[in-house]
Image 1 (tube, helix red, strand yellow):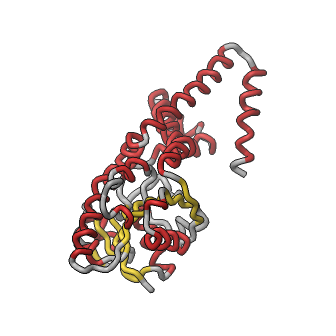
Image 2 (tube, one colour):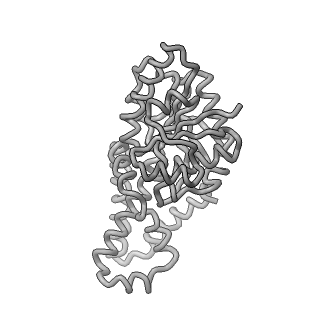
Image 3 (cartoon, helix red, strand yellow):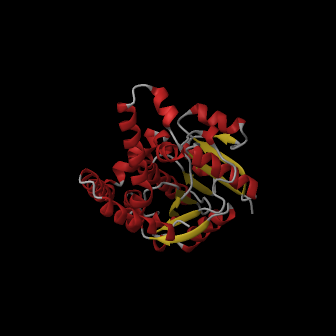
Length: 289
């Protein structure tokens, strides 16, 4: 059965999901909800969405609602969507499901922990993306052969959980499960610190290298890959870093400790200690093959 899907937030993730859902046949009708009217119109012109509606009307018309906005906005939208679902069910509406696509999970899940419609919500983190934003950044096949984490699945009813799981597999993702607290801890280490490092290095280089040509002349692939994430949308990443602040600050402390060790060994001209640290770090190849 082809579902009607309402995508709230038609940016890179929302646009790419819309494209994947249409191409896979999962949905033939996509509704977009976006406070940026230009994004909505761009999505319609690109064929990503069939129409643009208000949040309430989008929830009313859709079988599945996907929240693809920045994570702080999701915390505000999710209770509203569940309120709409509750009211519509009282009016005889059919079963509806809502899922969020945020890269933090615990605070979002907490925002509806006591909501009477909590069982119709599924918490998801599709691990895919680029440093670009907006519907024009949409990528065909963005989610293919990527991982998705479904969090706190025991709090969703089986119909909602299975439907979202099927949707993720339909667009080519491999799904695994985790509780939201552990998810946020692990993602702080493997994703969020990478962005902070990239932003910090970019700021350091820009502060030192006033002559932009020097940066371009000396930049090699290592530098480019490290600072690539510094091009990421600040409006997206500031809420992520603050929402996951407890775990991210732990990671930053650990990172500073390692940087301080490198600094000390370099100052002391201690090549043996530097080699030992770098060889220990080489073990990451066992994880990232």
